[in-house]
Length: 190
Image (cartoon, rainbow, N blue to C red):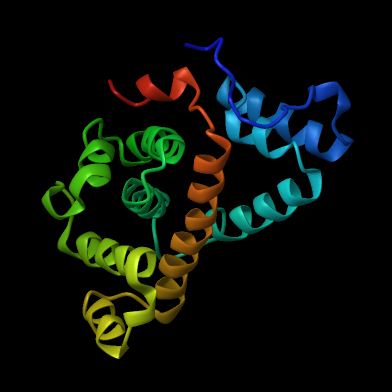
């Protein structure tokens, strides 16, 4: 499987990338033990790579009332709704690791309403799915439900912003036909 292309578009050689992008990719490789295909595929357009990962880091690496696992739940649930194989597989692996639960990612990707997660997390994902699928119909009642579950306005922003960023990511991954790394499929399963 790993001999198949990771993108419809050319994937640059690491040696040909601008220094900052090459250094970022090597740092990820050192931490993960492999280079996630998203880094190589998006490196095709260096300015867009930088912009995407700057926003990604601003959302996903910030201190938030949302746990890292909850952030990944948002990505997995909405990526499932957007039929994004890459993001469901890659972020599903991260979710399994962050939640220390080998089952949760599959449950959230298929039907978060039936997943073994808290009612608070189900409310969070219901809002994320509304942002994902019908953002034009969001109203004050949606915010009231989240506030009743203890979410702050900053956390509600985070839910919406993560959903929106990964809506972009899902569409790019689907358009590129980005293939998940084989390593992701087994991560966090034991």
